Length: 162
Image 1 (cartoon, rainbow, N blue to C red):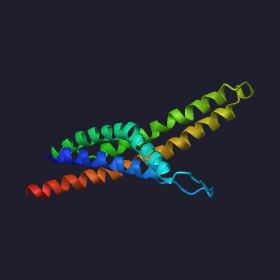
Image 2 (cartoon, rainbow, N blue to C red):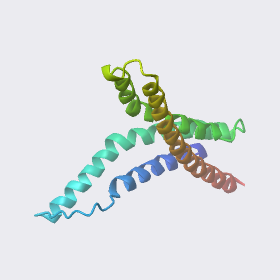
Image 3 (tube, one colour):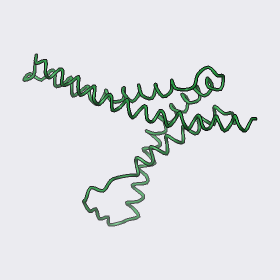
Image 4 (cartoon, rainbow, N blue to C red):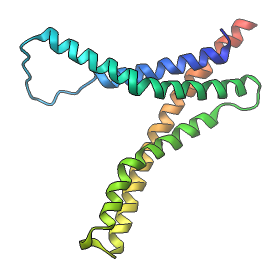
């Protein structure tokens, strides 16, 4: 297997691992849930996680894998060091927050009780900014993890070739 393919496969698996851990980890909320059939509850939880991984995480992981492959080829050709991928992840993290924040901000601007009030607009921009920066930070963190995993794979392949 070529180095860029191994890096892409590694990051595909890293995304699936992160998604799987996120889906299976649930903090206790202090309430007690009693199931009549514990085996049925386990099966339903496992089925939910597998479906989420297959239909949500797998396409994201495939996209990440493709971008890793592109950046790894450029790294192997000594055209870049791969930090553009980290910046792409940060920009994507910022962009992913917008569909969740903007509808509420726009709806608030067209509320008849708030029409024409500049404070509501400034507050809306603040919401977009805060949540966008949070998305940017998470994207940069995840991009750094993916950059590190890809670089380690590429380093191992270079050492194996020498």
